[in-house]
Length: 444
Image (cartoon, rainbow, N blue to C red):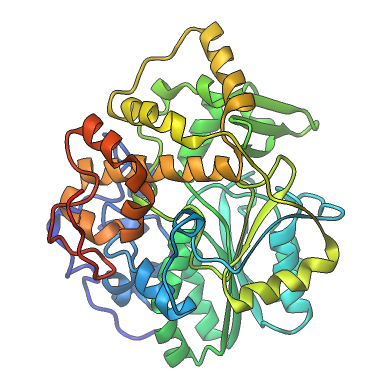
């Protein structure tokens, strides 16, 4: 490994530095207790890049130092997002609602992600796959691996909803001389990987990089994940899978197969104060828009997966799985615009928890009258954009122009008047502030 500068963060402003990554509100996340992360910037998702030979490039590649989404889009796709759904979902060539037939045993959903990674190795199209398996002795703690066989990839099936330093394995990629690589990861990891891709191609002779993106939001450190499950489940130690679902509920599958369900409105928010790291609350890429293909669920009905093939290579990856998939048309119902003014008011002044009968009514209305299908995905993404924009403005306001990409303001523009009325300031930054893309924003 080449010599690294003593301080890889020397170009960062002091305000971004601290004792370690911070939680979303007032506490310091448990990440900062890990000596490996000492001295990291407060906005850190522990992607693993700083544990690799690319540590000196952190200030140039990190999404939380400067969001480069628009520039990377131009390099990858030859263009930026068009108005409409691409503003929310990212650039895509094909969108499908699909699932494996039959589902892969042990997979979080139907098993498309691990099947695709394994298939690339089976066909010799890549030499290795960076992914995450589960740490021995735990249910959900991630352990990044460089899988060289299809069985290793298949064994990684299942969700590991905690921060995972997958990019640390770039050292192993270099040591093993891997030239054709597939990467499975979250949006922050993918942004850093894409930002560093030209250097990887030059220094490692990397000939091929297939990126399979997992949608991600509100990730947590593993100790906080354990704490979260303790607060929301009657039997947290028997949970084998869980997910925030399109029917406005958290569904938790237990060892005996039964499903425990908790409506979003019933979450004990008073006990979850500060559980999410600030990095996750300063992220603007739930759909993992810089991957070749994104495989998630939010825009699909229950039991199905939402697939976005973004690049020519992404289309080829989808075709590789097509014979083993079943499809249905995309659907959309409800109107997300109706509830957004109320959401902004709740964001500005969080209400108390309503009585149980009111919560039951709200849950029923959300499930049967709220946004569904693609409209649900649009609604959730817009709400997270608003929430995270506010987090940046309240906690890291001086860095807004660096870490909030220009497309966020375009996406949220239909609600500009509601935002200004609620927060007493324009949606867009002051005139003349330069965005990470190089565009200059105008006043709302």
